[in-house]
Length: 180
Image (cartoon, rainbow, N blue to C red; front, top):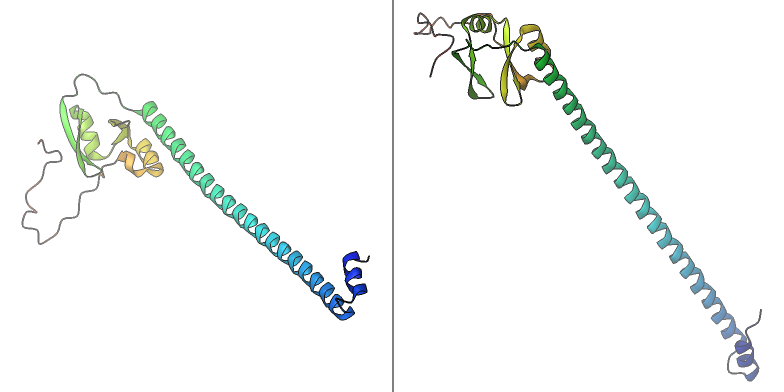
């Protein structure tokens, strides 16, 4: 295809054939460069879109992991609550002895009778935390709860604590339950 404007300039002699050829060559170079720049920008945008998709997928995976972890924790908590409510030992009106114990670095109190106190001291009963209150459960149940969440159970060992030979107060016994 011929350019009529270029043909007119050639006929009048204003432009030589070499100049017209160079102009055409420059024009094709510019169009090629523009096309390659458009392709490069298109490639860059494709890369940016792919990178954004990968980042979003990574964030989604992390969010899903957090949701799964929260669901697992909630399920374990519900299972522990069920174990405690089904296996708790009922405390009657005769439970007048205040039994103090430590839970999560705080001193807590539960009212028991003398028989329950002895079982707690010997390790036959454990104390479980359910909805900010404490219940007595058998040792087997307490161990199951402890396997699932250590913070929800207080177990007392039946083993005597190791006494240091050089302890000047070794001959004095400390009561199992101090009333404060």
